[in-house]
Amino acid sequence: MHRTHTAGELRSSDVGKKVTLSGWVQTTRDFGGMTFIDLRDRYGITQLSFNEELNNALNEKARKLGREYVIKVGGEVIERSNKNPNIPTGDIEIRVEHLEVLNESKLPPFTIEDETDGGEEIRLKYRYLDLRRSPIQQKVILRHRLNKAIRNYLDENGFTEVETPYLIKSTPEGARDFVVPSRLNENEYYALPQSPQTFKQLLMVGGLDKYYQVVKCFRDEDFRADRQPEFTQIDCEMSFVERDDVLSTFEGMIRAAFKDSKNIELGEIPKLTYAEAIRRFGSDKPDMRFAMELVDMDVVCKGKGFGVFDQADKVLSICVKGGSSYTRKELDALTDWVKRPQIGAKGLIYCRINEDGSYKSSVDKFFDQDALAAWADATKAESGDIILVLSGDESKVYKQMNELRLHVADQRGLRSGGDFKAVWVVDFPLLERDEESGQWHAMHHPFTSPKPEDLQLMESDPAAVRANAYDLAINGMEVGGGSIRIHDRELQQKMFKLLGFSRDEAQKQFGFLMDAFEYGAPPHGGIAFGLDRLAAILAGTDSIRDVIAFPKNNMGRDIMIDAPSELNEEQKKELGL
Ligand code: ASP
Image (cartoon, rainbow, N blue to C red; front, side):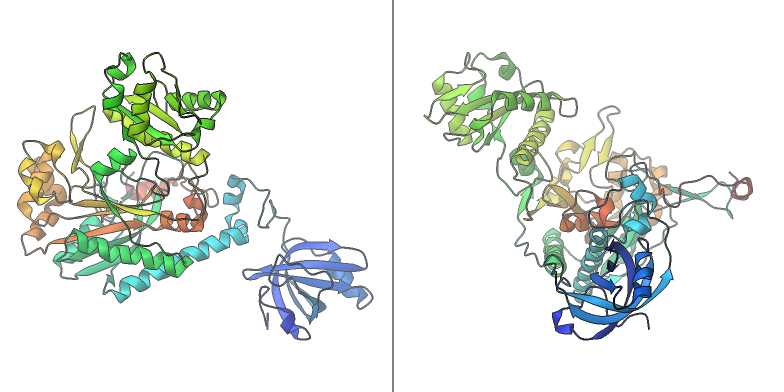
């Protein structure tokens, strides 16, 4: 028998028991006559003790054990004289009577402890060693619990998990496809799904009614921090539903997921329209953990002779509570920050509300105390606060203000801590225009239905058409999105036409879906959540790599198995490449 107990479960109530444990040697503390070993497994760490007076040979054997040796020990649980309150097994140790080396280990390239000295690349190369570290294991286990909570909820609510194919034809979700050459069909290629979108809609035509799948999706995007070329979605679809049916079903799912995996009460999730989210936060995925909302300053800022404001499309501000204590240096740093090319603002204007109620702004020449009082009024600023103002093109200044709002909140510690605030954002625009080509693109995807009341604008004013689409954001991150779909051939065709597809192209690429719509397609809608992102949020980490067992690096490489890699000539020939 390899073990009677794990390395995480023995307590003082077990003192006197004879036990057998197996695991890895995390550290050896060699005091000559006495040796202490921390034995580690997935469940924790247990101290082993060896004493030359009791058994000299055994103590000598223990002294020679290297880090990460796999051992099996037998002995008696005894009370520790030097207790360690930091670990659950800290009251006891095993006085070892038998020691067997099950496998030796080379010296690992980094220390396998909660805090490690290994950089990210080396840890990715030896991911199987990094996985031995408790902080990584805990995240993988949390992901499992999250996954299980979601599956339970969907199962209890009548959803059927259906697997859809991985070797398919391109689905446009806004990224490039990964392609797979077909050996049997020379010069033809499969695409890996960017999502199972068209299949889940066909499952609705097939009468499955409620579908879900925990599914890998593949998107060949340019490298960006924290993007993985393959990622996991919780992909869902329902028939005979309207938007609010979908939202309430999945609000329930997210609440159950938070409750069951981490005992967090998420509470009721508010809804914001896209227009309102942009107006109040400058973002379609606002972080709702703090207020600091955007205030439109056009009325109080324009027409006072200050050219920058007068020529701007839009003047916006935020009021930072307690911000009048910003030093000159801090304000200069903030100004430099908004002027960086990533943000692109021309400058930052401020107004302090002093403790005595007077105002001190960076534009006192143009704005007297009364004019600044109007700023304070508009922003509800009080003594001790500061108003930060940006101006410029409407299309840019909302985005810039969103960045500034988040940056200031980061600096002031408003985005840390363990609280979770979710928000639904609804009524997205149906289309967005590519600035260079002038071509319309679907903001969500081409299968998203316009809101019925906006249908008549599709030809006359496409920009004004709202989609029956929704996103879920948590703490400023998009974690899910979906829509009510088009289920009518004619409307789908109209949509493809708006997106610049010829009738033939649309038929060639999506004829199968439009044909299916002609055989009694039910009204349907759905949503997909990013499992990696959700798990990262729950685990309190910024990086989705932390919650993926075998992630790729920022260049999309798996440096452990060394992929992607070249094919040999014979393989290429066979594939006709
Ligand atoms: N297929 C969509 C996506 O991957 C989600 C959906 O519309 O259900 O974003």
